[in-house]
Length: 389
Image (cartoon, rainbow, N blue to C red):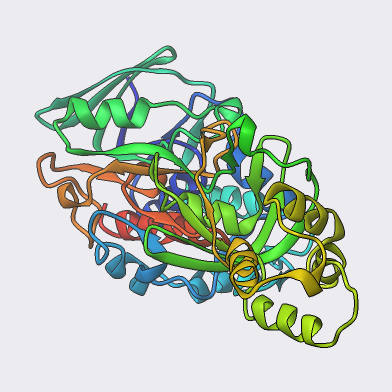
């Protein structure tokens, strides 16, 4: 029966990085994963280039039952720390926008870096291994798998969330946490497109524009994309993390502009301009046409009353959107909720009730914004745990 100091459950970004950190401290480390290949989420991230961190990562860019929980790990392992590792491995990178860092080439380079770090730390990867049972023992933990049993002094839960089942996401981590009596925060898809009721759908699939969206007390200025099912794009994905069923979102399709005043100026000019043409100068043409038709707005600008002008401006600047739902875990980039942070040490990520059990990454109730924040949480929480094992 293999005996190791540390057994890490999950060969994603957090698990691999934790293995490297712990192994370099002289610990014997084994990483188990039911997938036949490691780092699948890394490979599909950022269109295959992996948005591996964000320079603006701080506790305020994460959702959690305890908004202060992430501060410790994030301050002790920063985006610049991970960037230094990337550069040591000769991986070319660029900042796309808003502090988002991507590989110039392929996400495969980043995965290769993590695997090289594990090799240098003498950490072993046992892939294609299904875990059947985990139990506490006098000396640590006993883990039964379809490939045999393991004994470990400590275990690290790095099993990820429920998002993107086709690449192997399961609820194993949550089930194990409950088995050990850890409190859980209800999970739901996050960074995910909204769906709309059939009566609310627009024939605008593919139309995109910049907007400002407010949901759950938070506002994002990003791009919005109309889809066949509803709405997507960075603005919608960001808002989805703050959205609860039945809650409306408020969208400004012309942020920083004053549509009412533009209409008044056009009316005073005396020109016989139509509203669709006026809007087409400010919004995508298809959207302008559909918007006037859908909201039953008079087309001739010179006929509009002040009340109608205000109503038109409200339709554009204060569009109250009520999503029917989301596209679910199939397309969600991350999972909101998870193991309650009150159960863990913010310094070591160790479970207070279960000494020797550390929980890191997406399985914990810490969810980052879109744009590399969730990878930075994976690195920071993995470093915190790996440094304490």
